[in-house]
Image (cartoon, rainbow, N blue to C red; front, side, top):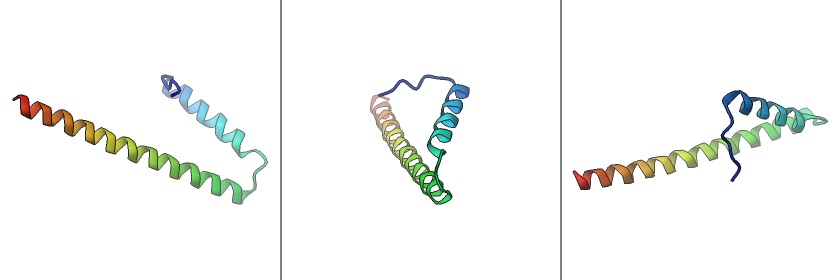
Amino acid sequence: MADLSCDSIELSMLATIIAIAISEDKTLDELNILGNLITSVGSIIVTIAAVEQSQASQKTNGSNQNNG
């Protein structure tokens, strides 16, 4: 997995550069499709992270209740 330990400014600049590079020489329809695809992928990634965080939290809370 790539190391994503850059600060928020660097990450924003990277996202901007990627967006500009991907957008070059695309039609409006292609840009809309790509934008929606990237948004969908991002939403799914955030959903996966939320579920995994919730499950980890439940395991931690469960083991704390068993110890207390």
